[in-house]
Length: 210
Image (cartoon, rainbow, N blue to C red; front, top):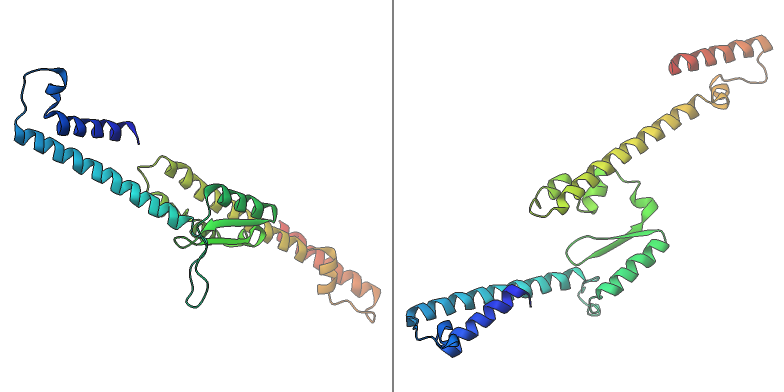
């Protein structure tokens, strides 16, 4: 129970049992009955709101901790793991080279990290629920700033990954062994023909690099 809720409960008890807070201090001031009832009703409404929010939060946590869903004809889903158990599971999967993340409500997904990072940036951010437009819906929570930065960072890293692979493919294409193969050299070619074909291949390679 936080401080605000405790004070509300004390105020309600004071109104209920003392007929007014002034009576608590031995003063002769009297509260109007209608004011007392009104104040007590407002306090009760506020406490009910707090309890409802706590109940809703508990249901959300229970749903997030649910790792399996019940399929018709199958065994009922096991109890949701506690936070320590969930932490231990995620750390254990990390040691195996896996990544664990929430998918649909109450559904934990686990995949090989090497496979997961091979996806396009859009798919990675979607799976992790970190698309920029998602972060912008949580402006009331300061965490959105870092979430937004993470999205931009992932996009840049994937862009650099794809550019590096493209450059590597070009270098492989222009490697000497590949150029010799493209020159279509065979044992029946005369030596001077072989030299000319190699020269032409390397001139082509040099023009591409420039």
